[in-house]
Image (cartoon, one colour):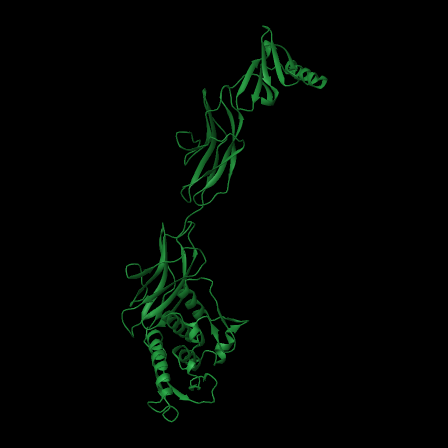
Length: 440
């Protein structure tokens, strides 16, 4: 209690020493009570140390619960308006920034509005753009949005009570500039038949959250644009590959393809790449000495090879003639690069998926050094086949796995690996993309 009396004595001593005219009691509800120093008779703590009492010379008493008091201050004159400070601007981006308000004093009445106001002209007011907040915390941080890029703005805090509106210090800032997007055409690869697998990546959206459109455009003339043929689509994520398959109308023509990306400023294009879709011309010959016409092995192997050739010629660009034979000494089936395919006595291997598996070996998958060199630490690393797998599975992180002879998924061999015709089609398209990787 003695300590509190001493504090009050010091307060009154300050009043007398500096001849202040007003005692300001700042309350936690953001209001301010003002008492003329000349009206004060004495001050004391009462109510079991819970009340600050100010006895006036007219013998009336103003009482304030101690927990309700934020601070005390003195002034020569009292300002009826609020006193605010503007928090300096930070987190500036292309269309947003952050500032805020510190409420120093509510003034002579309760604050009815507070926030920040901004304009492209100096000294903005609440008649310009503003952001009001009902929150009572101080400091209070507020975000501006929907700004225009590469523009200078002026901003300051404000607070309003029944006497009017006051403003804090004015700050200026300039939003970042918007640019056209940047896009790369990564690859355009024969996907078999009249299809091409196209991959691209948007490396810069130009400051926007994302591009409004992206995809590929193509034509028979160089430098295709959006006025030509367009295949739209993509995941709209920066630095993530997007893929699309394009089916061209005519066999044997050269088509020009490039990626595009569009934002509010316009459209940009990647590098032009050319592709010439060509249907496959892969055939086979059955060895008449080991596979006589009409034998049971002949019938099974012919059906398997006919089906395999259908898929390879429909969805790849390979050509050549394969010598096919039978040998009871072969455990399953076997093949070598551009040599022959042999089937053993197991009829469960005289099936389409085994014929396609061995055809892939005949073409070079697992049987050429260049292919084997692309299999590193259990993963096939060829860019074209990897892009094809990701396009087919719609998985931007999919990886082909492999060893010295085989790859998976979609390498095929056993009938149990096939659940639909898509498994055959995906197999051929991946092997056809390996042709680009390996230069067969």
